[in-house]
Amino acid sequence: MNVWIGGGVGTQTMQSFSGLAGVSGTPFTGSVGADYRMGCGLVLGAAFTAGTQAQRFSMGGGRFDRNEQVFSLYGAYQAGPVWGDVIGSYGLYQGKTTRQVPLGLYTDQNTATPGGDSLGLALRAGGDIRLGPLATGPVAGMVLQRIRINHFTESGDSGVTALAFGEQVRDSALLQLGWRASAELGRWRPFAEAKWNHELADTKSRQVQAALTSAAAPPYSMQAAPAALDWASATLGTSFKVNDSLMLRVSGSATSFNPQTVGYGCEVGASVSF
Image (cartoon, rainbow, N blue to C red; front, side, top):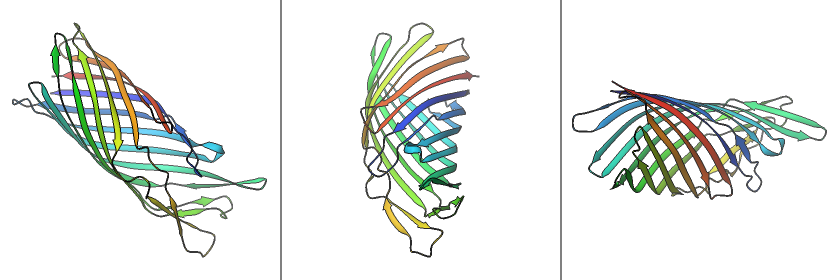
C-alpha cells in the first residue's frame, strides 16, 4: 500500500487573439492519493485534486477566479521494458467572472458565477532501455477530455452591459510523443521527460452564444477563443529515498514553442509505503 501527497504552483499566460483579451494567472494545486500493487504487478489507485486560479484579462478587462475539484482512478503496469498507465477523471468547476466595460468616463462592472464539469481519460505507454543505472526510452500518449461550462447570466452595476451566456462545451483529443530518462544514483533518482503535444480536435469552429439582458433581442453567436494546436512541454526533477518507506519528490515543468501560450510550474510531494 502506498499513500502520497503533493502540491504545486505555476504561472500561465495566454496572449491576445484577434478581438479577444489575453489572460494571465497563477494556478495552485494540491493532491492526495493511495494505490495498491497487486501480486501480478498491476497498480490500482485513486486520487483527489483541488486547485484554484485567479486569471486577469489584459487591457483592464477584469478577472476570472476558478476553483476545481478532480476525482481520479488510475492504473499502471510494467512487463519487462514495456510500461503503460491509464487515468480516468471527473472534475467540478466553480468560478467568478468580473468583466469591466468602459462607457465614456464611466466603467460598468459585471459579475457572474459560472460552473461546470469535465470528463477525462489519459493513456500513456512506452519502453525503457537500460544502460547501467540509466533507463531511457520513448513515450506516447493520448489525452481525451470534454469540458462543459453551464449557462450563466451576469449582473452589473448599471445592468446596461450585462450579458447572458449559453452552455459551452469543448472537446479535446491531445496526442503526445516524447522521450524520458531516469537514473538510479544511490538514494537519488533524477528524471526528465520532454514531449510534443498536438491537438487533434477542431478548435476553430466552437461558438459562444450570448444575449443582452437589458434588451428584448435575439441572442448572437461569436467564435470562442481558439486553443493552441502544437506546443512542447518538459519536466525535470528528482526523487529522494529517505528510507524504505518514505520517498520525497520535487520537479519543475515548462510549456514553450507556442507564442500564444507559455507556462511554468513546480511541484513537491511525498509518498509513504506500508
